[in-house]
Image (cartoon, rainbow, N blue to C red; front, side, top):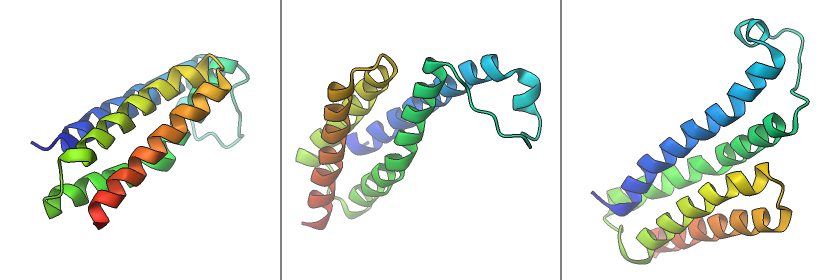
Length: 130
């Protein structure tokens, strides 16, 4: 199996972990009845952990579809491996590091992790389009 597809699987694991990191503290703060209900009255968690975890999760949701598309396109076109595989691993590592850097508030390091993940996507895209 290509590295890019294996990383895709681990990316889904990251997605699930971040979803839980965002939803569990939010549910604890807002209450299970509210979370299980229709949420007609919008409420936002006031705790820093829940808020930061939620924002980190939404940030992953913004870029994960691009990773999925590029990884699948690389696999379909037979352009996996080489620097595309390395970029896929770099993307995953940067995205994993992004989460604690955001939650514990290390702003510049968090921004660097985000940029590294973006550059990894660009490298994969260059491989796809070359």
